[in-house]
Length: 313
Image 1: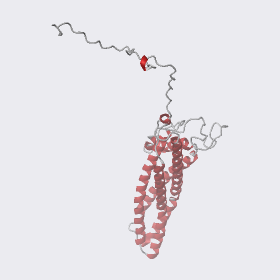
Image 2 (image 1 turned 180 degrees about the vertical axis):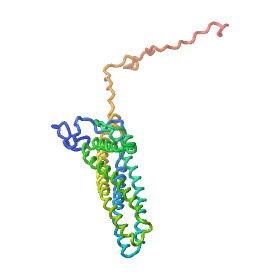
Image 3 (image 1 turned 90 degrees about the vertical axis):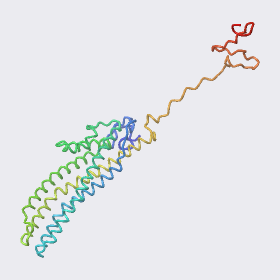
Image 4 (image 1 turned 120 degrees about the vertical axis):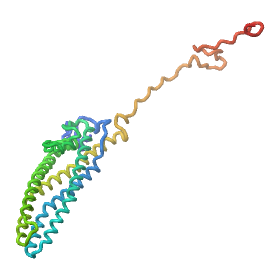
């Protein structure tokens, strides 16, 4: 017997799966009559988006270190063109980062909604939140600090039976990233306003010191972004694989239809064999009755006409 959650072989000596803890109570893999959604494609797209967004953010966080080096070179060569070019390149990197960030956010929300809806078809699950919170939970003030993590924990528990420690790591990294990124961005913007513009050769060292300070401050959000991004990628891919495998196991029982629809219908009762001839079926043509013994009314023969031949004659 296989576990309906993780698919491992189970032993009848245990009441729960020894790998994921799912109760082995003989319930079906999928509940009949409840639709399921494929999460493999949307999960892969979300994972790719998460990887690219994380990579771009790390590059942007490290870019002030490049600007600090260029500022020192500008002070030596008395040339500010390289420093201006670095500022333009940083601005151009922010455009694809913002586009990727928004696209990936939409993909992750759609994936969470579909994955949560799929758990409704898994017998024995006890979700704490409705499926719409997979999307609205990100937008409600204060609730957005807790609801997405709770939703993900429910999805992971009901899909794999384990992995909630990885959910905690992801959410901790996400919260640290959000707070640290906001703090360092405000600090960098304030420091940028204090720098002279356009810079003179005497100001290049101030620019170098400013960019070096920003680069050091970006270490915390960059590391937190890496932790959150990698953790979420692993969660999305593992949950997608687990749900697709469970849906495939449930669909293989009755291909093309739910179990209650595809189950073989009860056979019709077998008619009793005829052992005696019917009283209305003649055994010999010569013994056939002159009139069929039916209860149906028989048409009367036409009346014999009176003398004269016609009515009223």
